[in-house]
Image (cartoon, rainbow, N blue to C red; front, side):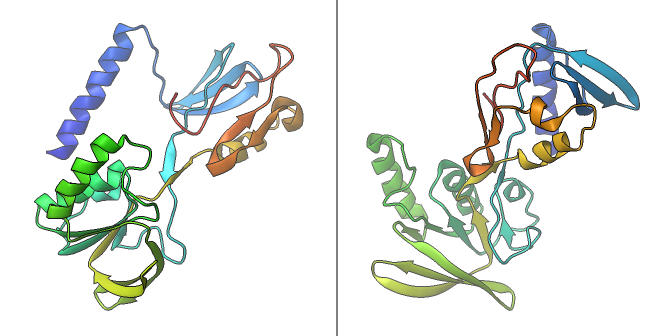
Length: 239
């Protein structure tokens, strides 16, 4: 059912793009010059010219140190939509809107939810007039909302995960059947920069003049003096 809904949404986006004369090409692209791309699409090579290029590579979750990205009981926002069973007790690391939303979903499905965040309140940056009533509502539904709390350590204990928390009141441990990490994301740009470095048609230093890796996996761009230099605008997340 979920996949059918996603398919319908994707088809809707395709129709919107078509109605606005947006050409969508699926394939692997490489830079040929500061204003040309080669796209390998279904075995056919296409050359595309452009004045400006936007790298919109999205983002990915930062991983928990010391655990495999494929650990069956440590999940991220995407995996949270694909769980085959409902965990009895779930820890949500991070008090952002995605974790709170997924925590509310699993709570409605029967999970006992604990939220742990390092900041003093949930939904950092949101209007207090929204945060206060939501916090009161979630406090009645969730087992614990631990603000100002850091997850210090995670250990496997048989079929469960033992978690050590630290806050102003000290340190204590608890056990969970699953952990949803919603702390932060980083721009999915590293692979693209490495991919550009493998291109031999251009001098890499000249091609990417003024471009440097930014914080959190993003990219910072310098000013270009003429239109013949790479006209890249942004990357890391959608505009």
